[in-house]
Image 1: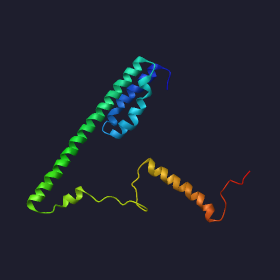
Image 2: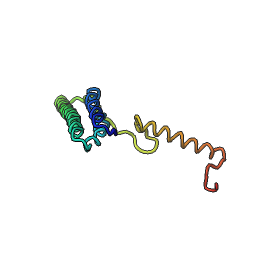
Image 3: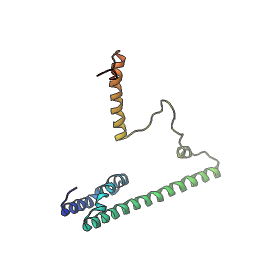
Length: 150
């Protein structure tokens, strides 16, 4: 955090200007932009706080617009599914899209694959490599324990 008030204001102006690049990505807005504003909201300088609240208001407004648009889209999709189900009952035919609307649940239990992305996959890959390096010594009959070491 810079002690020079105009530098903090410039950072907020830069953040505000760069919002156009992520305004359609609700995950980035909620997970990166809003947390980066947290300390500016309680800044000792009134001007910095006002500017931070203005950026926050713009960000929350974008998130609200996206949430409303998703709600409308979900409602239309639900209405379309119901309409197709009613049409199928009237004609007595089985529609292939009815099965697609209710896919089977993913496998659970031992051996079931979980979809991973981004940091989780990288973390698990690193943990697996570390665990593999520990077991190499055990398989070769070496002791990797440090309990008896002085």
